[in-house]
Image (cartoon, one colour):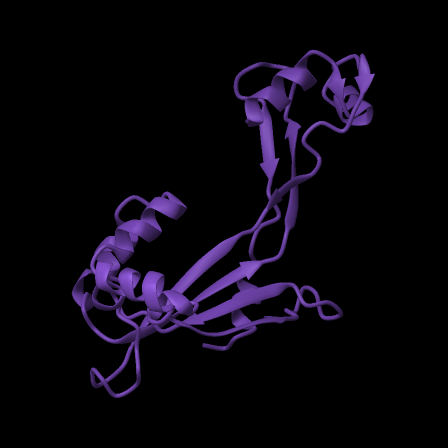
Length: 184
């Protein structure tokens, strides 16, 4: 995706001031890749409950079954009728945006089902990091939190007029200050 922006800019199609700054004659003044949007999200947890069963926790591996799907389809009851483990959600202002809520959070009560770590690693492309982190806690009652910055906008620029390597990405993603807002 970013290579197409790089090629366009190398051929003179892009923000003219930026192209001139790296020695490229602009052909078309066009805002190429100036509005990259992302919904940056991070995971915190698990927060293990001291005693299994002390607080109702949805265990995806035991609650979400073919029987539960059948109950939902025929009778409209069971775990498929709910947000499956979402205990709370909200939007708050972080220190970088005191006048406007910019941080979305979810508190989940899903336990630690087998495969959760691999699923998170698949979403975030983090190798086996989360799978290894969560492995000792599989099957335990736990809560976790997801934090998301709303609609961050970033951009891609050329570092110079050479083909390799000649781009810089500025995603404007999540800051530690946003997570510190929660004081976990």
